[in-house]
Amino acid sequence: MNVDIHPSWQSHLQPEFNKPYFKDLVDFVKAEYSTHKCFPKGSEIFNAFNHCTFEDVKVVIIGQDPYHGIGQANGLCFSVNKGIPHPPSLINIFREIEQDLGFPYPKTGNLMPWAEQGVLLLNATLTVRAHQAGSHQNKGWEQFTNAVIQLISERKQNIVFLLWGGFAKKKKQIINTASNSVLETGHPSPLSANRGYWFGNKHFSKTNYLLQQAGLPAIDWKLE
Image (cartoon, rainbow, N blue to C red; front, top):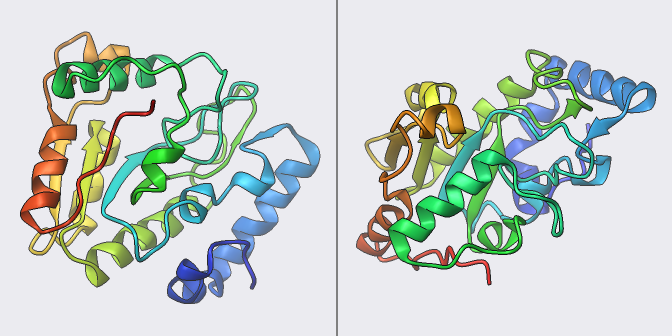
C-alpha cells in the first residue's frame, strides 16, 4: 500500500503499511473524511513525518490526538496554524519555555520550525472527527505510531523522548532507554499544570544539554 509520506520514512515503514490493520485503518479514515468533517486536512495527516525526516530526528514529543476545533490541527502535536489562538496546553508549553530559557512568548503557535530542526511532533492518533475528542482512537493509529516509536528507538541513538502526562509516559516501555534518553513530566494541560505537575520541568534546556552531550546540535526553541 502506498502512503503519501516523506521518502526517508517510506522504506522503514513500508512493512507496517502492508499489514492488514493498516489497510483497515486507511479504509476507516477515508470513510470518516468522506462523511464527516475531520482534522487535520488529508494532505497534512503525515505532516509530522513530512517536516522531520527519519535521518533528522533528534527529539520526539508525543501527544494524544489532534485538536478537534476548526482550523487548529496541522498534523504536528500541540501545534496550531499561524493566526489561530493558542490552546491552553500550548500556552503552558510556551510559558515553560519563557521560564526555562528566557525566550519571549511567541505570537505564532505553529511549531513547524521545531519539526524542521529534528523534533518529531507525533500524536498517537493522527486524525480526529471535528468537535469529538478521541473519536479516531483504537482504530489502528496507536499500533502504527507505537511502531514508529519502536523504530526510532531501535535504529537510532541519543534520541530525546519527551513524555508529558500519563498517556505519553506509558510509551516508555517500548523505548530503548539504554541508547536513548527519556524525560518525563506532567501534561501541559491546565488540569495538570495548575496542580504543579508541569511548570519547572526545564525539559527544553535539559533536551539541549543531552543533545550537546551527544555531540548533536541543540534545538532553537525560539519561534520568532
